[in-house]
Length: 313
Image (cartoon, rainbow, N blue to C red; front, side, top):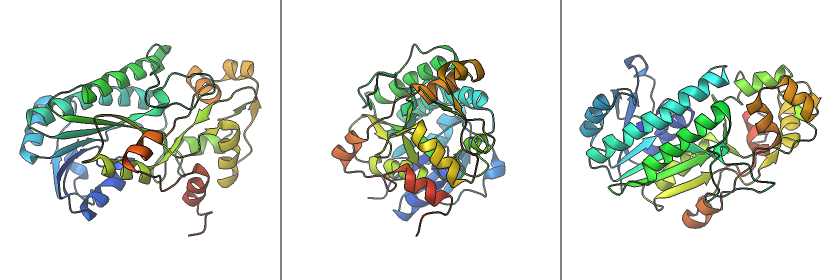
């Protein structure tokens, strides 16, 4: 049945893929943009409205006027070359912006809210691959702890409501067009410049999510799935010692440098060391078993190769 869908973050890396797919399924799409200057560049939108998720009074107006059945929050500040700035922007957009979206949706009588989150927020736990019942690392140090607490607050705001259905999709490291892993992106340039090393005695795991799979998961939960959280990741969590050299070869970059853990701690910021040495991967079992979702890109290997034109078809 066609739905009226309100999308915040319509021009982000997931939103750009999601909107045309919503239209293909016959849904009516209202796209929220922060400024009017980009209103002509939103393929897949039936209607474009201007507003800021941090401006609750304006948000109430535009959501009420759109009369959506579902509100989809794909807001993110992960853009540009500075990870610290991106993390701070995203934390505020998720904690305050998504809270505002949920409040505006509830007041407008919206049935369901779908919001994005991240599996990177899980507390590292040995060598386990983590599921949705694993704790978030809310007592992590520094800016990462601030970000995880923002994630936890945002998720609670979505799933703890009793007046609407809240679904949180925890993405892995997003890759595909316009992401940091695409040509010119932050990770791409770090690897080309030998700025992202291997840590020889680290076992950091990364779960990847192609933007097309993130979009397909949103489509899956527009009407299906119980209130709660779902990991949206591929089938193959990868150690940095595995994916990083493979990625470097695919882009024609230099082989990553190797550092000991002590060298890494002396030369790199804490968060980069954490990602390379102790971050854990996640399982998509809940989404697969309860809703039948399958990633179109089950492995980052084929996904990366396709991104760089190295995979047939």
